[in-house]
Length: 55
Length: 244
Image 1 (cartoon, rainbow over the protein chains, first blue to last red):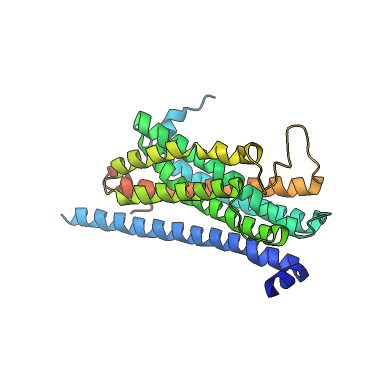
Image 2 (image 1 turned 45 degrees about the vertical axis):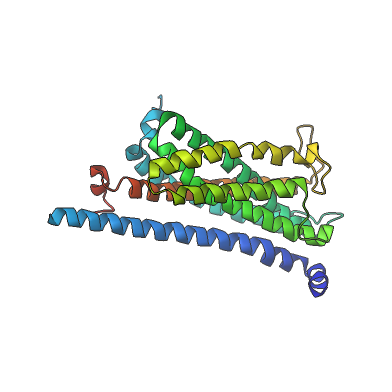
């Protein structure tokens, strides 16, 4: 009940925090995960390359 | 000058091309997000019946459209990989799936946020909402099935079948509001015209373009990692500047 009243009194805050902020946080987390995955994969490839050079 | 598209179907040529394209898509997407939000929150007027709550559509509608389009593109790439045994097609399908799932989630989440003040409920088992939820499960099923099989080529084939069969859900989502009596409203923008204010249309289409460019940029970023991982035993990968 409290949320119903609050959302009707503060519709723009409700929209921004509830949907736009959530969507942009999801995008930011996705970007961070993709960048992290690339770093890890590059590291693995470098290690494999170094190991094959030592052999 | 004719472009040899087949040249870019090989990971060796696609990898550097994707690297060059990513900044363009990412920057364009960021600019369009800023413009779309400005039009949507500053220029566009309040709705006569929904007040300010209608502004959720500027993220909800693009997310829903992108989630459906990405599924069709993913299924298309998966089918190409299955039929022609092309490595890059299957890699693209795997790269698109997580982004598609996130857009489906954002669509459901923002829809629930709109539903509460408008319908008085976060969720109803309406045909449009339920079919979109099934789309999210199909994306998650594709990702889980692919991850559960160790051999990447076998994983590609198994997940491709799921993607192709699941594509039947996309027209069901689109036509659900026509085929059944749904609480979810029908299309506001039709071929015959629209009653939407011009600024609302501009905001929605700008946000749609921003989401589309974002999806392309992130899928290209992810496919580069997949190419690196799958081709790590090849000579061309070890000769890349970023590996040295």
